[in-house]
Length: 318
Image 1 (spheres, rainbow, N blue to C red):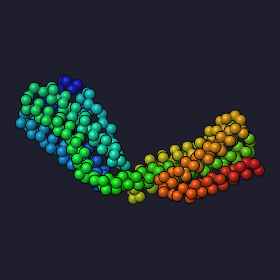
Image 2 (image 1 turned 180 degrees about the vertical axis):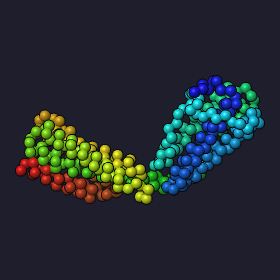
Image 3 (image 1 turned 90 degrees about the vertical axis):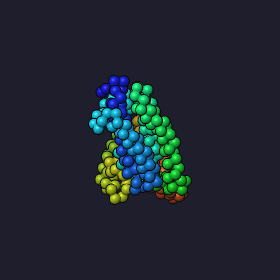
Image 4 (image 1 turned 60 degrees about the horizontal axis):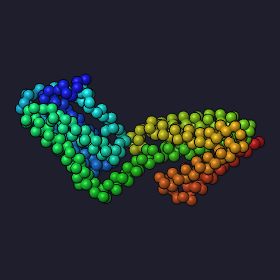
């Protein structure tokens, strides 16, 4: 890698062109990513892409007049000190707010580059253009806000926020809730059956741990293989599978961990308290994200959990 201080004016201009091309493509990727679900945000990023395209053309025109037609291939990764960017713009399920924050970061990085580059050049025309672009990048942050206000009025932003919420529920909350319900409820029977059959905390812990991990793996694969999300809009299958599997295992392990307590009676009381908390959390998620009425959500979850709990106790005590 080259140090920035070792670059001459021709190489600085070539690097500036490459950076503008990169930013232009980033905004183009943002626009394409949001075109289907968030058209107003996509239009905003198209406007920002056009701004970067104008900067690139001005740099190329100046380069051509100073150094000819050949532009050396100098990229971000070839120069020390430039920030390595994580390609969040390639994320399939990118959220608009995260993209807007990333765009703001890009503008700040580019402005700082132009300010530093201008301080190192001696040619008056190159120095003037770099200073002008630094100022425009500073104003570009305000321009981005103007584009946001122009394309995203209150009604449009509300619609996009609702669309983002629906996608979050569909891709994260639903598989997570399914896993939490399965892990919390389905493992109640084997854990408490083992507990009341042997009255040994360690034995109940081993059974609960095995049941939780097994259920997590099973539910994770089942969710990931259910559909690829291309038609349903449910997102990447392995992300859903990971969320569902982790929440399933977490739901079971929650009321398994108390059986690490040596005293069986204390462990059982704590485990029952954890079960109540888990069922309350499930009811809250159903009410908060699935718009299920509080009474219905609580009755459904508590009734199901109670039946499975009683079944486990009866089986273990028989």
